[in-house]
Amino acid sequence: MVFILGAFVNTAIGGDLDFLKKIDREVREDIMEFTKQMSFGFGLSIPEVEVIIKGFPHPSDAFMIIRIGKLSNHSLEDALRVYNSNSNRGWGYIAKQMEIKPGSREFNELKRTPKTLLVASKSASKGRGQKNKRK
Image 1 (cartoon, one colour):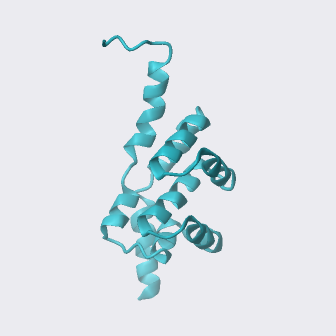
Image 2 (tube, rainbow, N blue to C red):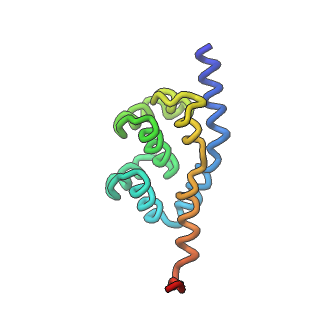
């Protein structure tokens, strides 16, 4: 039963995390903007975010581990420990280990596409070189 639940959790969350690929694509264009957004969005300093991003193969992995830590109300150190022990098992398993239950508000939030991170890089590039015309 536990194995079946674990497989369900990984499948349920895995297919819903397609936005992670989009984050990785967009972040390559402006890693500093992503770092600022992560800092502001999660209440971490820019140097903290930079260290975390450098410790992961993809920027989206850093995003997910910080997000899981925040949603689970655990420390970032706890989230990193769980990730390091279970990175090959998938985000659903890691979320479960961090006490985020399938179907919970936190679980659904984890699967939700973070619009602020995906939109900001586009809006920042559109606004470059243009002054605000509204006075």
